[in-house]
Length: 220
Image (cartoon, rainbow, N blue to C red; front, side, top):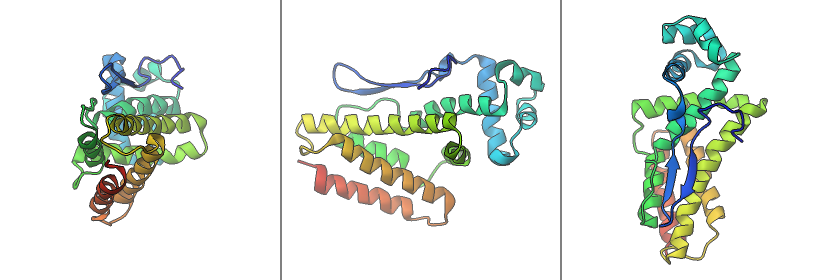
C-alpha cells in the first residue's frame, strides 16, 4: 500500500530465523529538510489542529519559506499523507522495535507500552495528532490507507507474538489472528477514551483486563 514512491513510506514488520518480531524503521530514508518539515507539521498540528492547519503555519514552525515545503509536497493533504507515514514509524517505535523470545512477557510489554499508567508528553502529543487527523479517513481513501497500515502493523506484531506462544506451548491452541484483533480493539478503544474523556482510570482498568484475559484464556 506504500506505493507512492516516496522514500519515507514507512517501516516493515518481519520475523527472523529465531522467530523474533523485528520492525524496520524506514523513516531514516527521509532527507534532513523533509524530516524538519515532518517535525514542523507535528508542532503545527499540536498547536492548531487539522481544521486550522495550513502550509503557512507549518512554514512558520519550520522557519523557512513556504516554497521550501512546496518543493517537496504539492498540497497540505499530500504533506499530511507523508506525515502519517512518518508518524506510523514513530508510533511503532514506542513499542520498542524488537520483541524478544518470551511470548508472555512480550505480550505484556506491548500492552503496557501502548496503555501505560501515565502518558508522557511526547507520546500523548503523538497520539493526539493521530486522533486529530483520523476523521479524514472517513472521506479520503489515502488517509484510510495510512490508518489501515497502523492497524495492520500493530495487529501483525501482536499476532506473531501470540503465534510464537502457541508454537512453544506457552499459550493454548488459540487462533492468533482472532486474539490479536481482540487485544488491538481493546487497546485502540482505550487509547481513544483516554484522549477524549476525563476517565483517568480507564486505561489502567482496560490494561488489567487484558492481563487477566491472557492469564485465564491464553496461558497453557
